Image 1 (cartoon, rainbow, N blue to C red):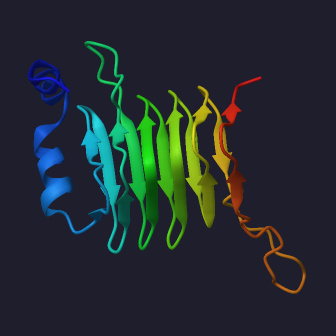
Image 2: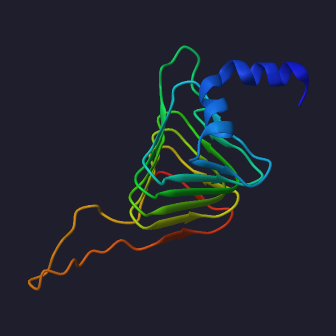
Length: 171
């Protein structure tokens, strides 16, 4: 990447968030060459114990926000939630990743388009080379417990596993 390309990238990032998350935050662990790239209007909320683990690719939050727009992209992580990015992940404007308490989202490499929602109560795994289209919702639970007569929850969260090179589109 040339000097002017790097300068252009820096002008689009939320520089304070970039420095904080990549160099000072205890919530972000960089185990490879990748960085968390919080573009302008990215919203990252992390509760106690939440962690983002980044491998060799970048985690880009809101990189394609339309010029002049105030559209946001969201990462919300509750207590002890984990977002593990092995290669790269791009989260488009108006897209959301929400990870509930003690849950995990693991991504090989993926592009998650506008208005898509990934919401994990237990575990969602997305393989390498995946594309998630606009307005696709991926949930591993319905997030409203239903109990039988014995008081046992009958709709427990179940892991969602999406393989490599999968395109999930809106029908």
